Length: 195
Image (tube, rainbow, N blue to C red; front, side, top):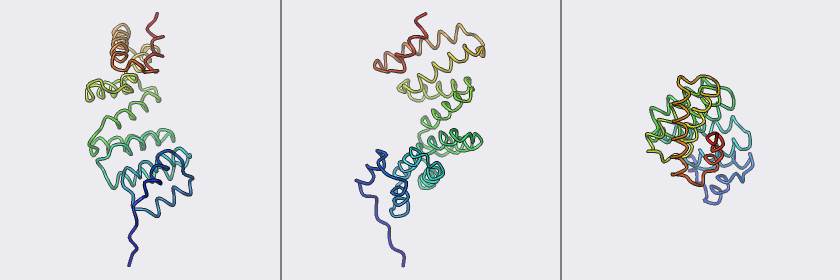
């Protein structure tokens, strides 16, 4: 007869979510409690914060297995695999998340951010634009991604029309400041448009 596992106590859940656990405490939680996909995702983030990347991967994958429609572990795995330079796995997780997750913009953002870091500014621009369409411009990170992608296309001479790209970046910046007036990143980008 197998012993039924208990749910994770709320105090432990808060401690995990605020990165207050040691590696040993996180392993204990994985082994001792019946965890929800959200809790597994939090444990994965806590492991990543401790630089325990294999354990983080295990928690994210288990979260996906339990709830394939939950978007956050896909996005966090993309980011984790990018940190490990495992771009083949990034693409595989992106494809799987794009098919199975119910909310895809978080996954799209992490994929776009990874493309930006790899120097694929057209790819990051497309991801940012898609998020802005899906979220009706209510995503500050996507606005910043679009602006930075456009500016990098110009800076690296990859732009097909630098005047149009600069104009689009400036319009996105203005709209972003209207929607998110306290955004430090958008305020920081004002230097690019003050010339």
